[in-house]
Image (tube, rainbow, N blue to C red; front, top):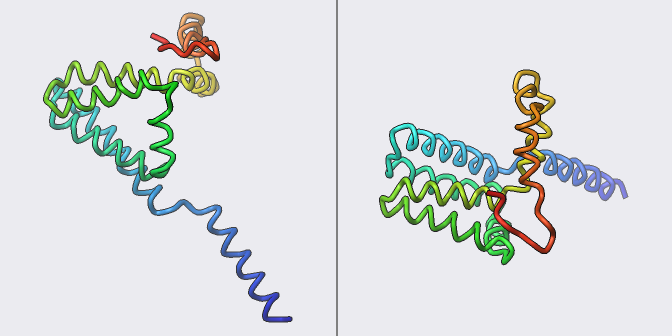
Length: 161
């Protein structure tokens, strides 16, 4: 009886710790995503250097897969209602890898706006409370710009650009 209670107590401690801890894959994935953004930023800064942009794309996609998991990544990138954004994004990645960096980055940005457009109003609303940046996001023209991303009817999924 005592041993069973001790095992139950210790198994609860371990399961509670696992819920609060971040897995190693998530940590590595977050680091790879940061490196990917860094390489993408440097690639744009150095006048659309295709090598840096290609490295950034590969690191970002690898990091995303490690952070949220393979099945969730596949589920996100195979939804039929997002096909236009998915094709644009991966078409842009392909063009960057084929050394067409400017056109590829334009397609990637379009794809990202299409895929994550409904998230922009939420992010803008939370940034209104930030002390320095909040005044910019509270400006009526900026509010109108970000609220236009959320005006998509349920049956009419279109790019917000």
